[in-house]
Amino acid sequence: MRSWQMGLLMRGGQKDDTQGCCEELQNVKDDCTCEAIQWTVQQQQQQSRLQGEEMERLMKKAEKLPSICDLSQTCQFSESSSN
Image (cartoon, rainbow, N blue to C red):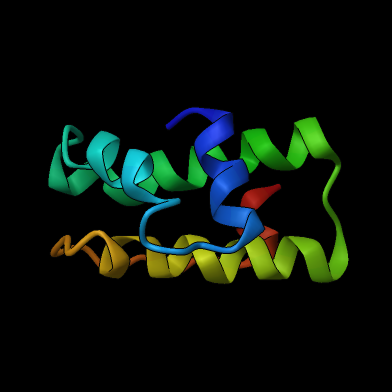
């Protein structure tokens, strides 16, 4: 997932904003979906130096991404697992 796609996710997470994310996630093996999302979250955190509420909000949206994209995966992240 590219950082611009995660940026769209952070700005609102509307279905049309996340379409690029969903398309890219559909090309990822099912058992790697959560890892791919988590990696992207980590990259976004490092680039933007997200902390506190911003990071919590990003993590919640990242967890919802598979559902938004109609994927079979369920992902759960915690802020501590992103460090």
